[in-house]
Length: 288
Image (cartoon, helix red, strand yellow):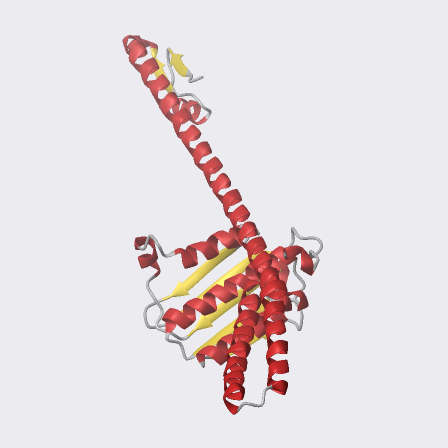
């Protein structure tokens, strides 16, 4: 409830102290005719404060629900990726292997040169399909993550360098950085998304990825010497979900993302995740 201090004699300093202690207002008895107005104003101010506190609480609850939804969606996406990867491996991979065996059998028994030419062409196409299915499966569910974050990021960087011809260097605070499975997955996906954006937009000549776990914080830094961009412009692009998605993904494990860039001066993306709350790393298979 709001309180109004009514006094026969009170100094300005005492009145200010009373307001600091929680009184809504004060009034001298000599001016008691203004009491209804003062009381009405105190009630209005108090109601406005309650409305503001309620709005702040509702906003916090909404943000919490959004964070929980984001975490649920990320988990669902990873589970779906794992399911699709298993289907590619078990069904499509098995079928392509069986076709390759049959083509090999036909090749051993066919004598017609035209048939042999068609078999060679079919074998080449089949090998391409097998390679494509393996590449898709690796992108969906990279088994190398089970060997640790450093090995996974090194493999990711090597593939990026091979495809884009952009010189890519990976440094780490140790040969292995032991982190929980969910943190490892967030770090890997962040590096993967960063490299994808570099390939699409940065026009970079070199990329440097640094991994460290100093002082109980996992830090993943991806820097390039490309064209950079204006961070403020991202707010004007309603469909610019790449960086926004990385921010939300970082929050699911209690981390945060920083983007440092200027037009013409490259980009540095830094993911930071405190590790103190994770007493023991999850089993590598748990992320799938």
